[in-house]
Image 1 (cartoon, one colour):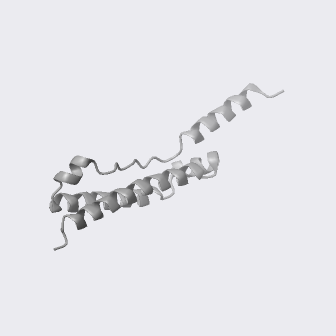
Image 2 (spheres, one colour; image 1 turned 30 degrees about the vertical axis):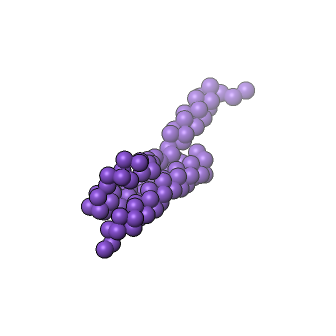
Image 3 (cartoon, helix red, strand yellow; image 1 turned 135 degrees about the vertical axis):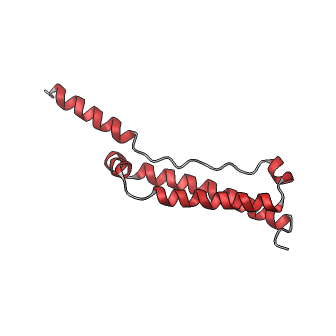
Length: 108
């Protein structure tokens, strides 16, 4: 028979590791209003914001307590998936901004 202390400790450890996945956030696709109203200056600012977001993702991948707990809980799979999803939204928004920049002849 399992001791109650062991059961409580096991449940506590699982609960902590489940909360250990890092959160990076998501960037939204360009709205139709953004596409029609952004000036070249606005596009440059938004590109800068995406680059800063990507930098924050990289800074977030450094090892800390959440990284260790995440590895213990799910072998780091949750953190990897979260990072991949955040990067995907950043890449999509950046591609939209670059296309808008080109379409508005901002390079000229």
